[in-house]
Image (cartoon, rainbow, N blue to C red):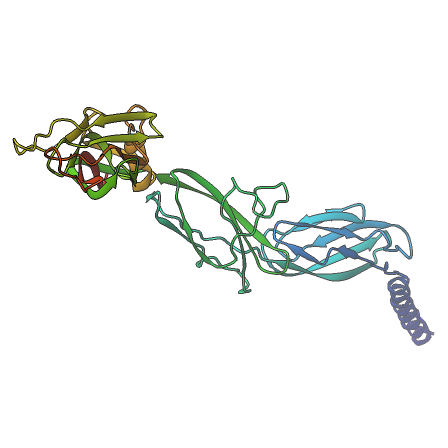
Length: 388
């Protein structure tokens, strides 16, 4: 009896052990996993942009969803009670987003999505620190780069004061597409523009630039010169001669003297008139020949002169965008530009009838030879550019 009792006890213990084991197995098999669903958009973004992650279509299957766990792949994580969130990627790369979902019966599931973050190009732009009007500025963006090694596209708007494509926007022109630009200048002042570079995949970088163009400085010294004009000819009574000279193109006129002289011939001297007109000045002057005594070996002359036409130039230092601008400033200064333009010289033969030297003799010359000498005093500014 005692042996049977022991046998029954062992059998009972074994039954209890296997029953408990069986009960544990049944409990594990009854835990139902949820079903994870994830929509990520957009899947391709630029640095600094944000994606939206939507896991609201995930199903608990049994019980309710108690937790959404997010691993964004860039070292950052988050937990939410709703299946919706967003995330911003600050640096380019390829990232795997892992979303895990848990339900109230202990089940768990996860899903992944791949996000491509495009790197933005980086502008490295150098411009000259000092430049003068008339010089060319080198704009160099050749050291710009794309972090992923893509080829860059360049778009320069070289002058915000000009709308070169006539679209109403001065700041979106495409004036050049090369990594470097040699920008000519012809005017002092601040020149504003911009550069945009692109990697061809939607990523851009933008930088404006400012170039301060300085005026040029010239040392001016006035040089006094004597300009001589000589003409000669022959006129009969009632005829005339005309000539045009332009003595002050690049100079300042100070004074002039003119002498018309007739050839000596026997008998009474002929009568000529010398005239000068400067239309731009409204200036007119005339002189008649007089004097001239054949027996005294004198010639008949007409003389004309004008002094202090303009003030004498003052040496000094002047600034401007170009040598031509400074010259124009000096030569076209109001009150100091008299007698500029054309000078119209005219000689009239008023009287040259044949005059006999002695009664009964015939003068066969119906006219006379003449010479005209004009001496004009001018001042010319000589410019020497100096560094400042």
